Length: 473
Image 1 (cartoon, rainbow, N blue to C red):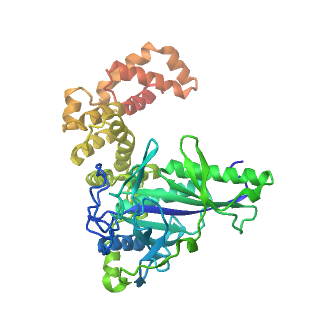
Image 2 (cartoon, rainbow, N blue to C red):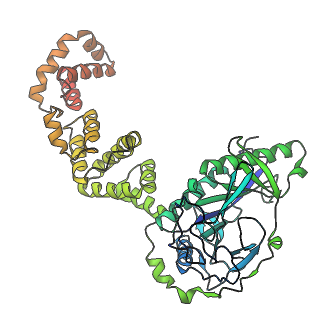
Image 3 (spheres, rainbow, N blue to C red):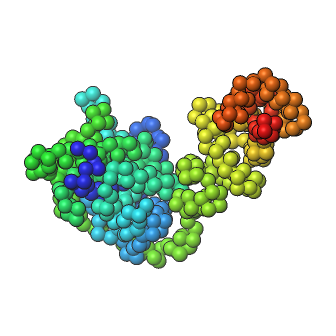
């Protein structure tokens, strides 16, 4: 059954974890280094839970979560505290995880129009590595600051869930609080999925854990909706049970892992070794709000208003801040809406294409690129020549005009010089001329191509079209 089947109504809530950018771990002074390859070097008695060791909260991590809350219009708690989440697993040396339960740092908020329940802070677990029949544990990640964002169950399609996760990744990067690199496990998505025959009623919830790519988020949710729909269709809806499922990337399907725990199973209670937090006293929230950078949604609106460029182009810039800043410098030099649109077309198609095929390309100087675009817009060089010159200035800084002059790429706009060439083409192609005069207006393009070829590619096609129409009246 397809997800869009109107007979059953899917509801999705997301739980998204992101490791935070801090110099040290959440409750100790060990280095927070996601790129460390040697196992068990960034560890100490605190993150290894040695007897007598005590945690100390990382203020920078708390500040980062507050930034996210402010960016998403959430409510920053005045009072907050940490709790112990009790469960036994080899990657948690204490036998509990320090997390937050009743008093999260952030409550409420919105992203892409979807309601957020809460954003809280906890410590990450260690890394399990399975080698043959043995399991090894790397504790470098144990105790790394981990932000968890929980949405309300208000998402109704796999595509929207994937879009939400992508947008959150962008926000975290714009705020510089997390790289949120899914391939490195710095951001992990869990999806709570249910379907129901009634639009206002939730069905039995299934959680799919540790989805590590946006594609996996979308495909896992679609698979679960299809699986549940088939069970409903075959009269086996009672087989949909509240459980935790995993995602098998190779088989492209989910699989049952364990019965889903409830909050009571974790026996939460306030962490006795950490003080309570009065966040409105510890942080200047008004100043933090003022200091927030431009966010993705704000950049989209500004680019649309200021530059009038295509939505697809805007997304390229939103996803690449360095390219966006460079484009804005070019636009400032051009100071012309149509030229800026043309520049954006060449950047998002040709420059991005060159970068994909040749990793050595660099951004040309804004002045050089603006000169290239002005020449193209004014008809001094052809589209083909523009692409060729761009291919050179992304490798070596050269003047586009100098390249055009040295390689005979400047288009001829002199009507007096072009008229003899056009007259020759007209006299040599009487059948095409007759066809054009007989009403087939597209026939003129054949004559244009021949005239440009006759000029060794230097004739401006727009000028050629103009002269042909005049001379064929």
